[in-house]
Amino acid sequence: MEQNFEKPKDVKQISDVVWEIPPSYKKGMLVPARIYATKKLFDDMDAGVFNQVTNVACLPGIQKYSFCMPDGHWGYGFPIGGVAAFDSETGVISPGGIGFDINCGMRLVTTNLTFKEVQPKLKELVDTMFKTVPSGVGARGFVSANKNQFREIIENGSKWCVENNYGWKEDMERTEGHGRIEWADAEKVSSKALERGINQLGTLGSGNHYLEIQVARAENIFDGKIAEKFGINMPEQVVIMVHCGSRGFGHQIGTDYLRIFEGAMKKYKIEVYDRELACAPFQSNEGQDYYKAMACAANMAFTNRQVILHRIREGFSKVFKTEAEKLDMHMVYDVAHNIAKLEEHIVDGKKKKLIVHRKGSTRAFPPNHPELANLYKDTGQPVIIGGSMETGSFLLVGTQKAMDETFGSTAHGSGRTMSRAAAKHKVRGEELQKDMEKRGIYVKATSMPGLAEEAGFAYKNINEVVDTLAQAGISLPVVSLFPLGNIKG
Amino acid sequence: MPKYKFLEDVAIADIAYEAYGKNLNEMFENAALAIFELSADIKTIESKEKVEIKLEHEKIDNLLYDFLSEILFLKDSKYMVFKDVEVSINEKNKKYYLTSILMGDTINPEKQHLENDIKAITMHMFEVRKGKNNWIATVVVDI
Image (cartoon, rainbow over all chains, first blue to last red; front, side, top):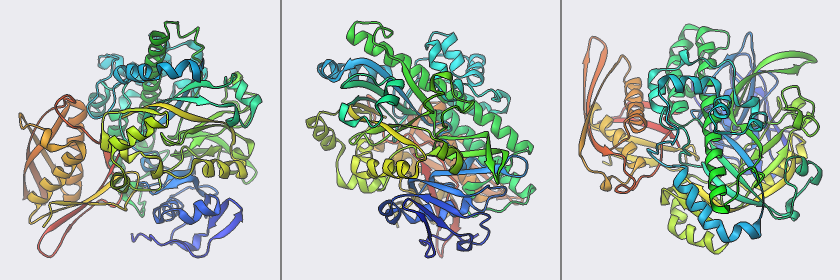
């Protein structure tokens, strides 16, 4: 099927920050597409987004709208920032709506240390964790597991970590779905995927993955009450953010099932605009097998971020010669932004079970949602939005409006606006590293070209992305976090 | 004719390229070389170890997808990065049979300049086509 990379002409403006592309834009669209963006972000969006968000609108069983969040950009299959929900009885599941890095996500941890206390030890902290949290090509993790133990890990996620002294009990309730997706079934995972992931527990990866030490400054707190409930409760408080996923294990599961789904599409007579949108009915054997294998990768990613947290606690404990418990190194939250989950939502006034795909999109559940731990029942779910290593990140909170409008979903990052090659033409990694150090941000990376690719100018303005979310009401800013030290893969 | 060319304005968070070859063997080799170059500075890799890959498929594009995916599998499971490759493809009874020899070394950040940890070969825009006098593949890799 021919692809259309032209920007649509008849876009309907629904509000200051919501834009609708009607089904007449492309043959086969079952629902309109909706893009959340300020006018500037909308005008600057690359043509790939319009093509991909409307391709998704053609997939069988899609409900209400095919969404793209303000951090959206050209991805593969779905756009990055893509959200789509499918009828769980008649709709499909698509690995291209989740991505190869299944359960790539964010984790945020507090300390009771201030900027003044951390600043003199910043290099030591970054250097320590650069050694203990391996990153880059071919990095081997520090958790050794045999095949049976690895199968146990991918079915149990964070629960395994806590039972094996890689976490605190409270970490689980501060993780999306308690860090364990119960429908995971290791039988649905290929031996190749096991082989690829077994030695990667506790590794960051590369690309846009990072471990960052950040500061929450008083002037950057937008909602003091909720910030306090999230554990941001003192001036100039230092926090740590981690961005990574299921590593080669998830990548192989994505690869395996993409090929399986190509065959299944013929069987179920489904046609798509982009081969990366290969899909199968959710209730089919192929669909259910993928859902169970995907859950294994999601559990591996929760485990990966959990054992990395263990290393972070060890690192801070060593440098400050104080136990992590005494440093109040509590997790704020851990949230997935590449995943599909069976959830209940209201469609046409009726409760319906949907298979919600979020690709580069974060769950943003409101206060009192049954899936939230008691801790966050009053506030709503913490939403962690990772920005560039130069400009900072945000902590937000989920809302009822997100539930009503976007299947409880919001943005996941600031979103790229420049290609990796263009970023490398503009700056050299070594130069950027020195320049950032002058500005008080100490960064270590395994690859200097890789560092240049992640320069702040390659990303959209995160404030504009968060403004869109706040104006739309699909999540509300709590505090913005400024980078001090960063480890890049 | 270049062996491959990176497409700078496609799939901006990832990396897209075209690989060329006067025949299928050469185009497959060049598509693999692009992966090697994205993974590391190949000048810093020694040809110390040899790995053989054997694959078969009815469709030539799926054969290329599986071949490139296999290289990523070897990176994570055998800790290998490569610098040289030879490919031989035979067609028999409507099926393509591939044998490839890859030369490279065990990953060692002390000796090698490692770059992108490629996650996967995507199917987005993935294509193998015959030009006037050559074969061309379009590949987008997930970074």
